[in-house]
Length: 148
Ligand code: IDP
Ligand code: MG
Image 1 (spheres, helix red, strand yellow):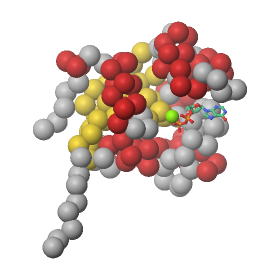
Image 2 (cartoon, protein in one colour; image 1 turned 60 degrees about the vertical axis):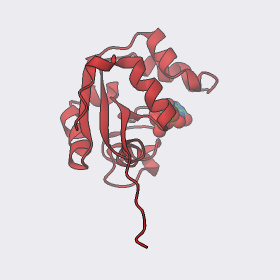
Image 3 (spheres, helix red, strand yellow; image 1 turned 180 degrees about the vertical axis):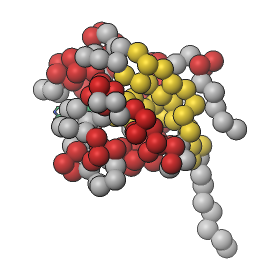
């Protein structure tokens, strides 16, 4: 019998972080998603307040880098997006590369654009549960334009 391959269309949250926005790398970074077949189905630019940054990264509140991370994320504008595609959550993480750019595979966004483990250019949801919660953190359902 032929193997069954399951392909799930997913949505995931992506953020171009303040370091990459400041360096005018938005266009370069979005190209990585689009050339891999992830569709941008929602996008907005905003500047996070300290409280929003804290709430978004609440899962890391007990980590030693939490306050620095919050300050960094609120330090300038970010581009928040919903990406859609087959296995979008895991594929986005592959396209991003490892958190620490010195460990990121070549050709990944973080290998190419990150400057440190903190200033690492992009955020991406890490599971279906976090993707759902993170998308809802930034977008109302009618702000998302899914492709069929
Ligand atoms: P991820 O972004 O690859 O999912 P997480 O472990 O969820 O990585 O960490 C969230 C963010 O916190 C990272 O993207 C990075 O900006 C920052 N961060 C993670 N580890 C460190 C660290 O050891 N020092 C400083 N910042 C860190
Ligand atoms: Mg994470």
